[in-house]
Image (cartoon, rainbow, N blue to C red; front, side):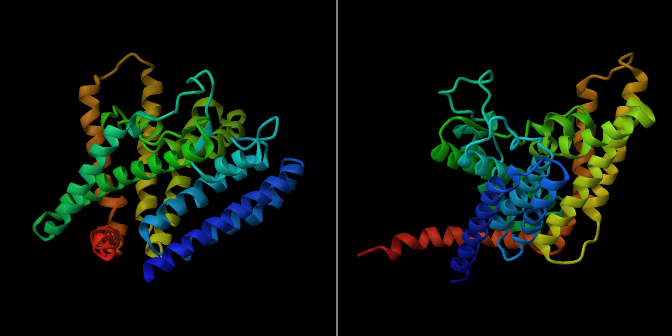
Length: 350
C-alpha cells in the first residue's frame, strides 16, 4: 500500500511539472526575453524546487530531483534570456518543448546522424546495458555480505552502483522518448569511460556527468568568463569560472543530498567539489604555464587521477549518503521489487 501511494505521488508530481512547463510555453514565451521573462518563469523555478519534497523513494525521488531541480530549472533559466535548447527560432512545437524541458534530451542534429537512425549512445547499447545490469545484480547480491567486507570496499561498490544505475535510468528515459516522439531526438551524454581519464580536467570536462557539464557551462562558466574577461584577462577569468562552476555544482549536490536524507547539510559533498575545483584550477594553470613543452604519458597520469577521485569520493562524496541510510533504503527498494516480481506469478495462478 505504501509503495502504491508513493507511485501515485510520483505521478502527481510529474503531472504538475508538465502543467508548469505548459505555462512556460504559453505565457513566458510571449514575453520579452531578459528580466521580464525571468520574472514570469521564477514561480515555476521555485515550484520545481518544492515538487520533489513529497517523494521518499530513492529510485523515484533521485531522477525527479535531477531532472526538475537541476536540468529543467537551468534550461528554464537559459530560456528566460533566450538561450539554451528551449530557445529556438522558429518556436519549438508544443510536445517537443515539454519533452526537452523535462527530460535529458536534445533534438538530433542532421549532420551527426541520419534522421532514420536512432541516436543511441555507445554506453546505451542493449548488450552493454545487459552486462551493466548484471554487474548491478552482482553488487546488490554482495550487499548481503557487507558485514564481512571493509567499509571502503562497500563504499566503492556504492560508487559503481550509483554510476551504473544512472546509466540504466537514462537508457530507460531514452527508450521512453523514442517510443513517444520517434527518432528525432538524442539523449544528452552522461558518462564517457571515466576510468580512462588522464587528468582532472579530462575527467570532469569530458568524461564524468557530461549532462551536468553541458548545462553548467552556459549557465555558470560562460557568463562568468564574459564578465571577468575585461577585468582580469582570459587566463584568470577562465580559472575563476572553473572554480565557480565547481562551487555551484557542490551546492546543488548538497541540495540533492538534503532531498534524499532530509537532514541538515554537513557540507562534505560541497567540500568535495571545492577540493576538486581547486585542484582542477591548479592543473589548468600548470598546463598553461608549461604550454605543451612538457607532457606526461596517459599511463603515468591516468591511475593517479582515478585514484584521487576514488579516494576523495570515499572520503567526502559518499559518507553523507551511507551515514543517513540512503544506501540501505535503496537496497531495500531493490529487494522489495524483486519480492514483488517473485510473488506476482503466484498471485495470478488460477
